[in-house]
Length: 82
Image 1 (spheres, helix red, strand yellow):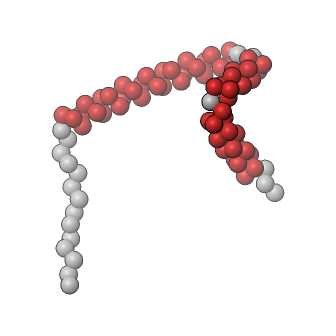
Image 2 (cartoon, helix red, strand yellow):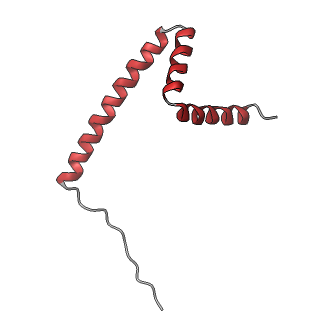
Image 3 (cartoon, one colour):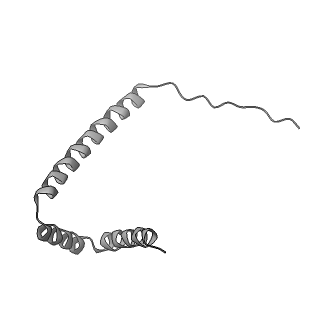
């Protein structure tokens, strides 16, 4: 039995696609600007302030803190394995 060859053709761009791309670009720019501002603030802080902020964030979101610590520990373990 012969198989039919089907080719996948991408759908033509519609107004909805264009709108969602515009929305995605706006969201990307907003997140990028917020991140740049946070990084600038982090560079200006002292180590003690960064530790205090990190501890406060872990107190507010302990599950996320455990996950981040596990990921960091995994990658450090991989880097320093003999």
